[in-house]
Image 1 (cartoon, rainbow, N blue to C red):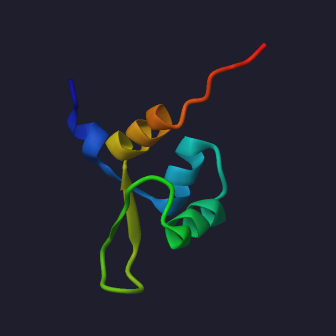
Image 2 (cartoon, rainbow, N blue to C red):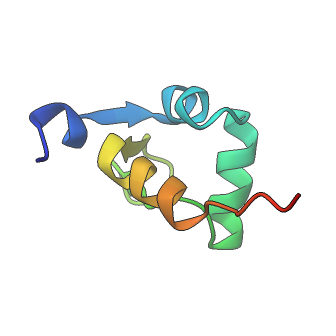
Length: 68
């Protein structure tokens, strides 16, 4: 069941920490049209926000099987 926290907005820095990547990696993924969904608070140069639910869904969709 989703909680209010699952939809709380995270900054790009906090989202990067959550995913274990650099904020610049998230910025590059956004420019390349890949990576987790995000919202922008302004038209072009506004602050970027990520939801925990979207980050978690993206992680689930990009799991890789361990081959031994």
